Length: 227
Image (cartoon, rainbow, N blue to C red; front, side):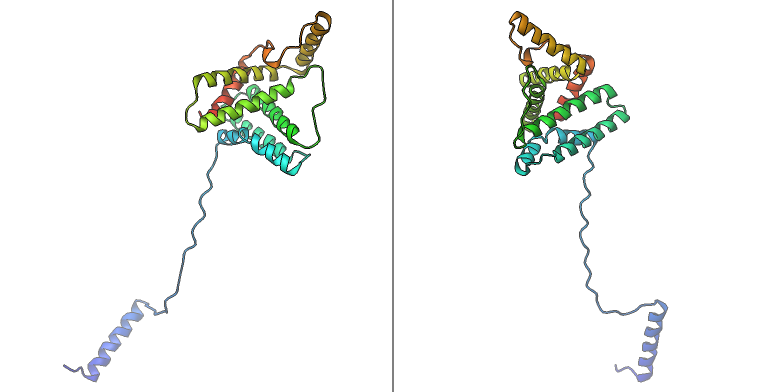
């Protein structure tokens, strides 16, 4: 049935009024898109960060060889970041200050050894007795071994026991004061010169493993094995 003009105008007026009351507005379609949000960076705990620093010896060696960095820029940054992470654990009561200091000293020595062994045209000054390079080398080697085994998911008990003994021996050496080290060297040299005794290897040194040295070694082992 055809609609009259009057009825059409009435319906049209109702429609317009309805739109005004609801404040409806007609706009052309607008293309919109949402940019993907960047992933939230993972927040690493102090232990996580420390583990990263302890498995960075290979990267330090590679960077030193490639750049010939005689300033040891990357190594210095590792040492500084390592100290900050340890400070956080001391502040939270997870580590005692003496144990943290011992761990830091050992890490400093390991970083220096890796850098010195890879930077062009440098070498250790020869000394009659100097166990520091060997001690640092043992620490780096055991770190690599434990990291490799932890990546496999299981660690052979015998390998773990050897690593623990080696790292405890290392920590016992680092626990010595400078005066203690010099006295040890003097004693060894005297025995060699006066009695003809051979200079013992680092592994054959009789060192007391103090409670702090044992705790420092256990912390490093737990760190590298992901405990």
